[in-house]
Length: 157
Ligand SMILES: [Zn+2]
Image 1 (spheres, protein in one colour):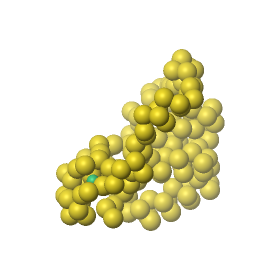
Image 2: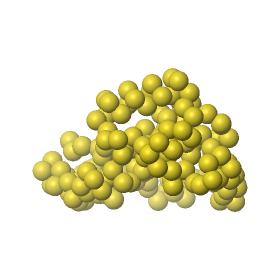
Image 3: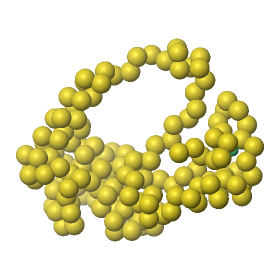
């Protein structure tokens, strides 16, 4: 979604002309419970045509696909199903969090006022990030990345 009705809030390309009121009304259209169910919130800044054309080639889709297939196979071998399909206590059992990663998760959840559902969903994302990295245990870095993906929208102003 755009950050505001005109689409330029926070952009360096063009000034946003929306009022703070318009921005909060616009962002308020996505309810908390709905946002709760979206696991990956990623801010994508607007780029100029020139930046777009001069951008270097990224990693190939084929290489990324290979990594994803491998991570999925790790999850299936460990628990017989994908990370997304884990529920309740299974998540805690299979996440295998390092002690400091568990502490980090608890602190972040408390600070951000997360529901049990949000916390469990973030844990599943952290488990997947660890699988993508080929790590048996979920470490602090994996949890930190998952936490980053579940953040609030940038407020107006
Ligand atoms: Zn705007």
